[in-house]
Image (tube, rainbow, N blue to C red):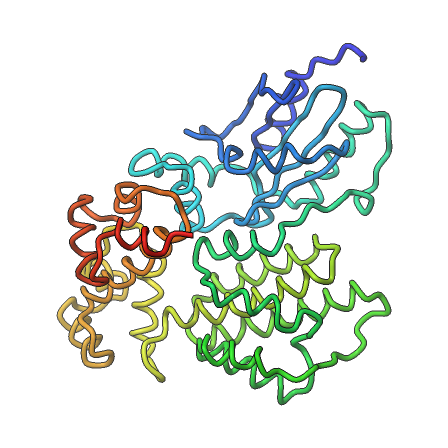
Length: 401
């Protein structure tokens, strides 16, 4: 091999891109460079899958739509990442910190460091790697030649939802795998009304009984045809989710992320699975923020605030200040419209999140209680038992996978 200074090359790439770079020799990390001061490298969550990439050039997409570029040559591996097309939102970064077992001040430090990483299109990362691959492996590769690495459906179910799915999703992937969502205007309106109302029960019933549908011809290529249908569906679902009360930025970012994921797929089966997951995702998110059949804007704004701050110690004063309304009026109007005490609703949503984490993650009760903003583990356990009738450990034991 030519006398390359690999550490120097990695340092320059990291400085130019603003993205962390790692060098491995015989699968052991020998160098790391990052302008972002990350207290813990998030690659630890995905290193097993990343090391399965054996081609000279490849990449890996995480459930949070971060990506890592990979170069393999001789006994060496260079990994660049994480970065993403658009800046990550606070909630996703908090969730990532939680998965890394980072809490309190360390989690804050991690979130700020991740925000400092430069967002970059995947194509730009691939261009960098194509140059390195040409230097190290003496081959010229175009972007369309790069192999795509895609999660299996079970991973989409588990990770895409951040542990928010349940056993009912199995039906989504088995019932009509070759069925397309886009068809006539009547079917489209029925489906999008379900999304707008956040009616997951109706969506499951619709999928169970949906007619065989056909889309118009959008492309002569079958894969491109299905991707175009996916993009249309994502656009419609995001707009109807917004009409249903979902935060505009959340809905559009989620749509963008799904479309980016769609474009990386090379399997029509995976596209079908992802499409159903996307529609269910939007529907479930709308369901979480809608209380009653016709919630007011105030109630929807309150629900959105709570969903964005589940990892904070939320108070009615915080919400009132954010919505420019007095605390007493806020609580009175919320109770009158929903029949639920606002403080109880905050705790209810935190416990719902705790239930998902206990069921689908291996995090301890202490870590979960800290992540959800409880003052102590004992307070968390007391509130959890009040809402579920069980302690956190009892709940986990009953619902363990």
